[in-house]
Length: 291
Image (cartoon, rainbow, N blue to C red; front, side, top):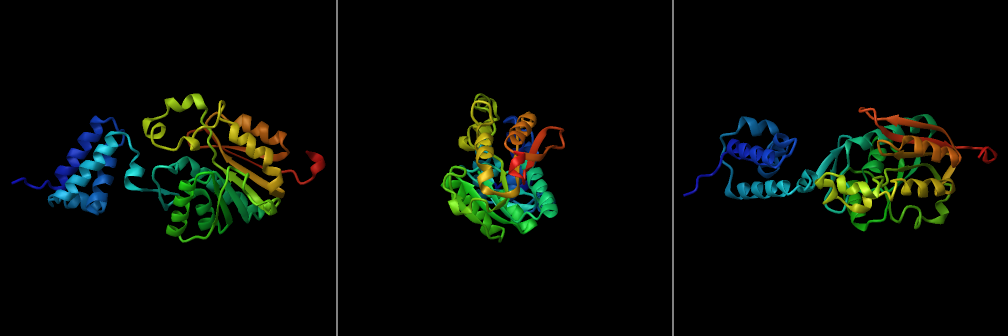
């Protein structure tokens, strides 16, 4: 009769398999997957290693490890991730929130306190992580827009999980936004697709093969969506409204130039902790004669 593995045995095997599969964070990932299967905390994982796991738990853990060995993102396997301290449901069809985007949210929150920003529209909202955090931490009135019905399903689920109230709209950027909303937003926020088309094949397989292409492909130079948003933003912002973008690591100067040319001033580039371009924002000039 087969003897059940202990928690410690299973964890050791999981770490070995993910290390052989080339996962940089193999130990951490093996722990998270086993914690999910066994419904244990990390402390329990290490203090109750002698406890046997059931055959069903062993089977589920083996399945999770196989998925990870085949490069399925850890967040998709777990069905969730954390962003700015809040839980978010994720899965195929929605971009996984990343720590890089926290700087964008923090920037909007900071500027909103100084400039009475209240009503915000987030273009390409995906999981809804940006407007949900703006609503949760800043009490801002937010609209999340995405072209993908599947992404919006996740956004609505995350709205419920985080107990906030937002508006959601299926639209290709501004295309289906009600015309009566023109001139009503204090800020437009977006983390649009910004990977140049030719670079997508060079991405990690977890990203390239699993995350939605329409959330990655920014056209030939990666700037296609920025150009569209900047072109139309003046129609939707209030006088003196703000435009905030997350950007690629080498796109700062291009975005500053595009925004200044479209009538924005106080244009500012913020770099992340690695010193890479990450956020650009600016204020629409209040006097049209200045544009």
